[in-house]
Structures are given as structure tokens and as C-alpha cells.
Length: 298
Image 1 (cartoon, helix red, strand yellow):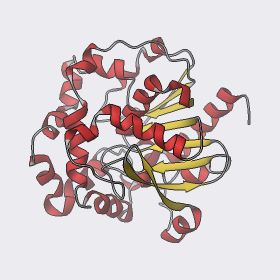
Image 2 (cartoon, helix red, strand yellow):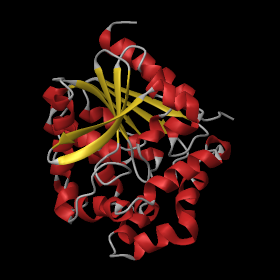
Image 3 (cartoon, one colour):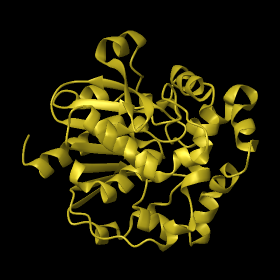
Image 4 (cartoon, helix red, strand yellow):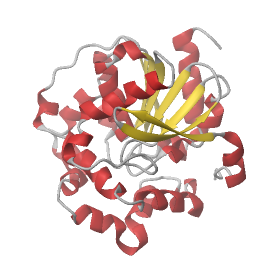
């Protein structure tokens, strides 16, 4: 079992800030100095899901872990238009520039991975490296959505498109569904302490957060995803994959190299969807190895 950092250790290790980007105020946690490494969390998380990576990579980077728009302490704009992928990508570019950088290493998991892949195609001039965890290349995701097995895995996407019902279900019984999402989708149930679960519940309970989370799904998935063509990315890319992901089948990683010029893939067995929290030491090791290979340093 890996215990989570104590509250005192968190307070000593990193600092909290806000930045106005693309017309919204975004909260972030920052630690370290050097080239920018920007972390994007998924659903139903917030910056805290990167608690094991922040201090490790702050040794030689300026690490910034965002609360995406709609989450935790970031603004929660109303309306589906605020959660279109074009707006989410603009947020990230504005953050990079607002922090005084031209480029970054971008790290994304789950929804953060969707944004990271989209950013790589839209703003590739802003990227040095791309690291994605348990979210397939969007071409492979689109292929998967044509198969019965992935459609069954992705049943929740249809549920989340419904008005008000998903919010009602997620907050019922003191946000019990939030706890189940983390513990049921982890192979190592001890990866999440009671304090961790409380932190995720508290973030989800903030006014407007649940509807904002659902609006990502309601706004961003469309038939265009199935029709889009994808060229080859030149950016060095690492895909880390917990093999026991209940949301995305391992087969969605097969053939990703066809869309990459410099592609690295690391599987982690006996690990679920929350890979960077369930197996943080291995994730950090694979990230370190990738950084060394892709930069010629270390």
C-alpha cells in the first residue's frame, strides 16, 4: 500500500495560484523551477490526482497541475458552449502563455488526455513532449466506439448526456458514486485512502461542479469524432496504460504507432484506470525514462 502525502507535506511542498486564461479563472498548484510541465486531470478528479507526480518532477521542472474549467476551485461557466473542445484547448494555450512560456511538456489522464491529444494536433508548436495515460489516441477511440465491446464499456457516456439525472445519481448518498468510481476501478483498493476519497467528494460537491463535469460529455462528443482524419504527430509521445482499465480496453492502444513519428508505450499490469495514483512509482519511472530518451539528457 502507498500512503498519500500528509496535509502538512502538501502545504510545504507546493503553492496554490489562480490564472485568468481564455476568459475564465483557473486554479492550479505549482512547484519547482525550470521548463514547464503541465498536468491535466480527468473525471471526476482535480489537481490532487497528480499528488505523486508533482514533487517528483518539480526537481527539474516548473510543475503546474490545473483544475480544469468546471472543476474544484476553477470557474464553472454555464452553458454547453463553454465546454466545447475548442474552448478547452484555448484554456491550455492561454495557461502556457500566461505562465510566461512558449512551450511545455503536457501530461494528461482521462479527460485531460482527450484535451492533451486535441492540443497536440491544434497547438503542436506549443509542445516539447506529450504524455497521456489511459486515454487512447482519438483515432483509436473513434474506432473503439464502433465496436460492441467498447460501446458497452462506454455506456456511462450516454447516461451523462441526460439532463439532471447524472448529477442526482452522483451526489446521492453523500456522493457514494464518486467513491465507487475510484475504488471499484482500482485493482489495488488500498491506493485510495479515506482522506483521498473525501478530497474528491469535496471537490465534486462544490457549487456547479457536477453539472460542469457532465457538460464535458454533453458538449464534446459528436459524430465529427468518428469522421475526423488524423495526420502523423512529430512530437515525442508516451502512452502509459493500466491494463485492467474498466473504461477503455487495452485493444484501443494497438496500432497507435501509425499516428506517431516518435511513440513510446508502457503497459502496467494489475492496474486500473487511475494509473498515476494506483502505481505512482512505475508511472514516475516510465515518465523519467521517456524524458531522458526524448531529450538526450539525464
